[in-house]
Image (cartoon, rainbow over all chains, first blue to last red; front, side):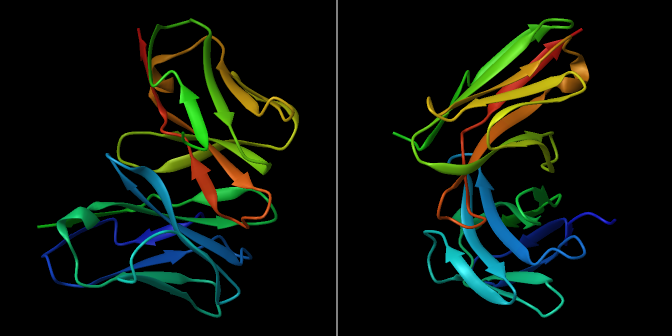
Length: 110
Length: 110
């Protein structure tokens, strides 16, 4: 079974731009969660999608949004990028209890 | 006070030593995860626990639900075990949302 796939792996964007990151979960997993990891804040929960519905949302501004498609693939979007959005963005897919993480997308905002 | 506290933050060991990393949490949980993160960012799930003890190779994880405490042990440590180890909990009512400890940077010297 293929693992969780995140694309792209690396991304450089300019302040004010927007970015879309993609996550393909393990086949059969319907839950996808997104996390942001920064040196200062550690790993923080962004949001969770289950069967195309956002089930839970972390404490992030409205510039951060996401969606999930009928095939369970998920995208997250960050609009009006700020320097502080530079981070590793990880997604995880889940079966009943176990969580499986992707390799992450490293976003650098310059 | 963070909901999930790990200790120590940094740990240096000699190859072959027995290593223990501790995690304490303050909320009711449905599961606790031990994760490993190597440089480059990808996260691997080592264990998911809701009670008792699990063993995989040289790794052992235990949890005491009453005391809200978990430990990760590495027997016969090896330089390839050098990584950041992260404890994460899933709250009883938080779906897939994980709350993370700050991580323990482990360095095993040959």
